[in-house]
Length: 232
Image (cartoon, rainbow, N blue to C red; front, side, top):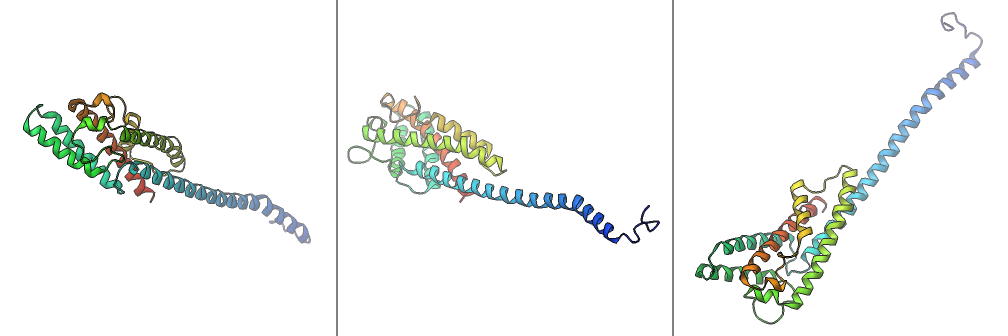
């Protein structure tokens, strides 16, 4: 109405003051919102970068821990070997005790076992029986330490890294891989699943325990390989 009747005539200074106040009332909050949104985006980007760096470091540590007990320095190779031997053991369990085919299958398994190069095997020459593995005190001690390191590192990934990545909408593991790794870490070298337990010294119990061990190892390798590729 004031504009319609030229009410501002002769009041240019007042017009400027009102105009400035109007700009301040409406423009300043809008500018503050704009800069706040920019600041929030920068903070979120930095936090996401830190989450990626943490995931990368813990994934690399998980990989190194898994490889520590074996001669291989290739996680994919270790996982494939574990899967292959798990299949061999499943076949052995289906064959009749005393059958020539079973004896041959066991020999073939130990060829692959020797390639795996598990550390601290006592004695000399290739391993040729599950009883020898179960009674190898030096190797048992090494694998006990290895198991504890693997379980500890998985716990770090599961309870610290997973929620951190989720809070920033970053990937962790496929649900099937996460579930498989969780169960594998929880049961790793548990009773009946530990080929270095002297209770598994006979071929029957030894084959079963070794099959479970290879199953758990292959699942953990699969999870570690996925994380290594997601956060190289």
